[in-house]
Image 1 (cartoon, one colour):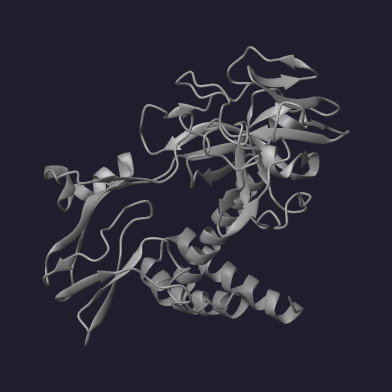
Image 2 (cartoon, rainbow, N blue to C red):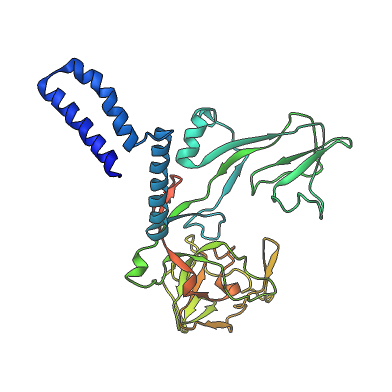
Length: 349
């Protein structure tokens, strides 16, 4: 600060301190405003000080949260059923009647705890249920969209993904078209720390990025997303599908987790391992042709390549179709299911 400003502040401080020491309280009260004005010249009061302070606290809290998310625990949600019965994606239970916990305000607490939300869809007008036609601009927005059409009026409706609706049904305004419960998919924390001290292990549930994974079929693997699968093959291993299950380096693995078998005891009998030959997998409008289409096929992993499969081998787009996952794509192992509360809540296995 300038010398003259410091001298002025020092003089005001000496006068104020002297009055306080002598106990001249009336003079202290008179002098207080002069002293405060002097201080304000040196440290001007900021406008909206409380707002500025709260914003600073919020920015710091967000920075800490983002740093923790980036370097320690990163949350992911399970959108599909490719890891069932280990981890569940978004589900719907149609026709389930509502209970006392499906009414406000208890409905909100049920969702916060169990991820369940009761939904009723009612007809907005009289008419006939029609599904979107090919080329309809609404066709690709959501796979559970339909219309109630009476010729002069067409009202769009939607039901939770995975629900079903009867096309051609005649309805009246206010009729229940669909009712049931939508259940949120499992949300997991991914460990971003442990792989800094050790490498990935067989049978771990891992999350990885789809960016840059080699194209195996005539359509690319959707970029910019993350998949969660179980780690089956390590670098330099040879992976094949035998009638008895997954074979690593020619030896069928006995551990059902490593073999990516269903926990209901079913082996990997999912097509393309039928006599009909290779079967394509269709997902989000993309068609994938399997690389492991018979027991004679195999995938030889190179250095820094891993092979993954979903536990739900009946319906999983995984390494059987698009091949190895480069090590650079691996994010970390799933460690904890933190929401919603279910029999799977807790440590991911």
